Length: 603
Image 1 (tube, rainbow, N blue to C red):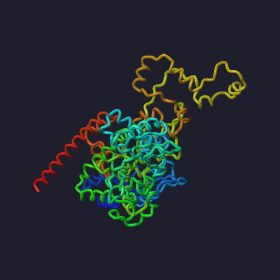
Image 2 (tube, rainbow, N blue to C red; image 1 turned 30 degrees about the vertical axis):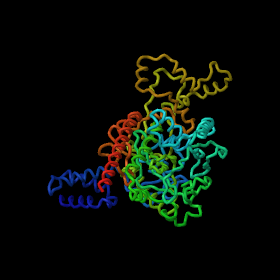
Image 3 (cartoon, rainbow, N blue to C red; image 1 turned 90 degrees about the horizontal axis):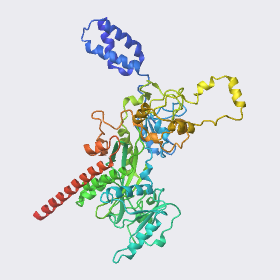
Image 4 (cartoon, rainbow, N blue to C red; image 1 turned 90 degrees about the vertical axis):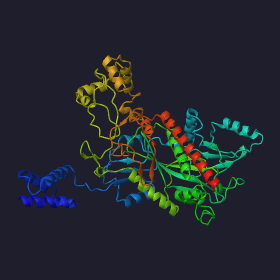
């Protein structure tokens, strides 16, 4: 009998995929038999393994090997579906599956705040709330201007001077006239962009103010008239940046990216030629020179970062220092919009457009929300497909995420969505999500309004008599009047202590909150605390993973920056660390310059 137990246990251990055939019944019997016999035939370790396996299989469900599930909005890029299917994922079927039976939801438009409230531990959303603060051109200009005023222009000189029209029209006229009247100074060129359009639509470049015409809110900036040219063609960089969290701030940049070229040679004498001044592929792919071979560039209008770095090194350019400057731009730009509402299990993929001038100074042009993932050429396919694969790796899915179960309840999520908790003691217990808010202390006095279940138990005759009355002795007590009474009621010492501990800014009742615009954050949502382990932290040291695929962590860049970004972002401390970092980079540049001069002198 002992040898029989040993053989059966061995089969179960070695062939775990076949355990479903005899699964739980056999494992229970084996566990009971092993406990009855003395520990012989080297069954000590095997018996303990068997018991652990039996316990595991009893608690897990039959769908332990279920694939991960993705959910796409109707306008999601096709390549997202392709990549996820390549990885063995399955697509969400709204008719057949529960509302929470998915792992990744990808859409082009922002999610509602209720979606962030009801997020589950196994789920990820591809947008962070209020990320539009830096993706709209006017919002970005205001935030950068504020940071420049608060922390000095030395750090924030990477963005051209900007005027938001029509509000800043007078300021723009003053600046324009000042430059015109300067003796010996060449008049500047200006570029006008609609604040909420992308892909080069509505852009106007001008030198004379009489050519400035607009019919919507636009931003007017100084046009960088000395861009870096390769074989006479203008270029800019599309840098992919993934923010896995704004609190703590965690920023990854993608090492590979796209260098986008204009398809006609740069010429300030023809400001209306979009194929010479704009690098947007959505415009240049319709140009006559797009498919032609262009000297030094080739066919099409794109390079990879790898090819661009090789080009710079051939001419002795320190590409490492250039990329350090670009990383500084990314960090300083994202600091300008912190803090954002606290949200968990989401991420944001930004497209930073960086232009480099002929002195190798990088300039921030704009930040793109939902950077284009369409495939216009083979370079797009190479870069963007690998980018999406690395994003999925960065989301750090675990085996338990395939179960799509609430760990606390240990059962499958119910097919319903309850984004807001209804008032009253009869409210069912909230589904365990990732966000838990501190609750405001309630008064010990009796509430003048009866809960719904108790009111329902009242006599039918009483209800009938109440409905017959046309005149009330007192005005009907509304939710607002009840809250006002509680606010004006004198507080006891114990209540005051409780409120100090659980202090929140003017919290609306959950019932009234449900009537708010779901696209805007509620005051209490900003003070929510994440109650589960963030997916982007390493299991070993509870720190952000330094590298995932071609994604490289650029913030936090040292221990001080890490501490300053926890429990609320301490922007001042982070700015100090960035100043130290910039000083080290300048010192390193000077040392490298001296070495090169010494080398050339010796030669």
